[in-house]
Image (cartoon, rainbow, N blue to C red; front, side, top):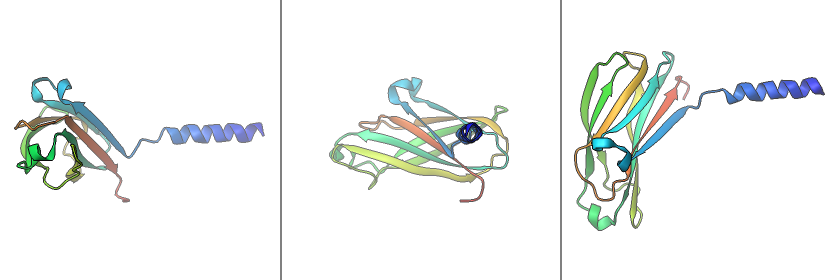
Length: 148
């Protein structure tokens, strides 16, 4: 009996050490100095590919957002060796996740990424327009070993 309990405890301990298939973080507007939302993503495992999604919440009545097609973003990727890659993207708003006073957005950004450099990447996201009720930005990184 004692052996069975020990084996079960060991098995549960091993299973609890498995890395989750995704990681997410959210930075509130008031925690983004200068309007730059700074994330880190560990892209260290060469056997995986990575998917990225962005999310936000807009707490504003629909009439304040009716003119808004999307939120323009400047996104800087900084590689583990310090190489800077920049791009601009639109986070679409129209017709997504709307409720009476709140709009929740979860938008796929990049899928199947296998970086040229493996390690810790920095991802800085800067909204290029003021948006009513903007609460912050979140980043979801999903790991895939190709067995989806």
